[in-house]
Length: 71
Image (cartoon, rainbow, N blue to C red; front, side, top):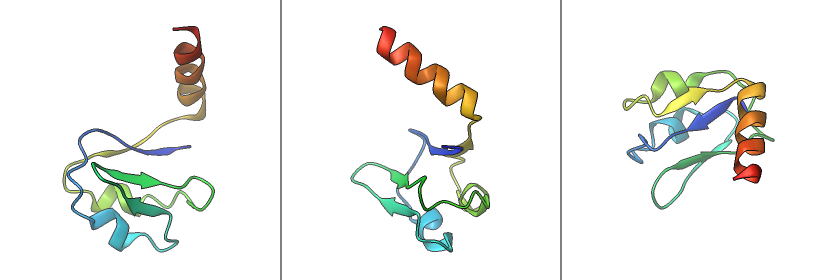
């Protein structure tokens, strides 16, 4: 899950419109990236005007899941 949409998302749709694989959908409060479709091209991150899309290393996401389960 390398690309993640953060709380900075303003739901402008720039990432959705620019995603060549259709991996991004708009939710009620922010967009969401389907990691099973995402090809990790980075276009969404480049198109985002609010810098809400970040690249997260696999080890970081694994640590977050472990921390969430422990808490």
